[in-house]
Length: 321
Image (cartoon, rainbow, N blue to C red; front, side, top):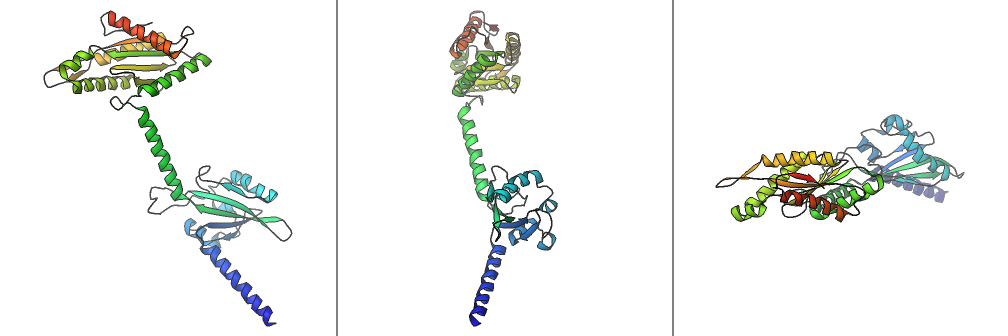
């Protein structure tokens, strides 16, 4: 009889410890019955939700958290009841199951707690699953670190594509875009035009005023170009004072209209120096992509030929090949 009493005492002590662990572990634990009513609600869930057990136990999870998608959660949990196998969701798939505030100083920029969740079957003595346990992990620190890394990588990727002087795409990335547009035309035959242009007498500007003023002239032209671009247009610095613009969904007439607007905008500008204002003009060659153009290199050559025509006919003009 003593042994039985001792065994019971040890058992009760073990149960007490187990319940103490479940209540104080830094993980959310929720037990749900087959009707998604809450049967267990640990301290983690109480602390972060602000909902005490007496207001939660026995009530529907969807009534307690109406913002939780019932359809989505049922699709996730029902296989656990039927197949007796766990289900998982990560913060990358769904940032959180419960929108809890997050207050850690290290990740103070987080507007909410990022969560990974696991739903495990709780099998009774008859081999049936009448309840499931929802385990909620706070992964805000690792999520914020990963998001910061992604943002940094995207910034680096952007920097590697941008020409530092003009803030336009650099030649390498712009030529990649040119190849993509050529392939798109080859498949869909959507009109697309290329404009190549350069700054007239730029060497004279550098020789007369110096490279600092020359850089100012290039920046001024770049600003004029950006002001004329649509969101779908792709502009880049092709060479020292040479620029390229891919005009998507644009035929020759539209490309010449763009070229003339840009030419006049640049002509109206001037770069101030210590001695005088430097007037700027540009010459522009246009080539609409068509079936006779057999490569991106050929496309560039055609636009360059149109640009050369402008050079031979007085500059400060545009011409289509």
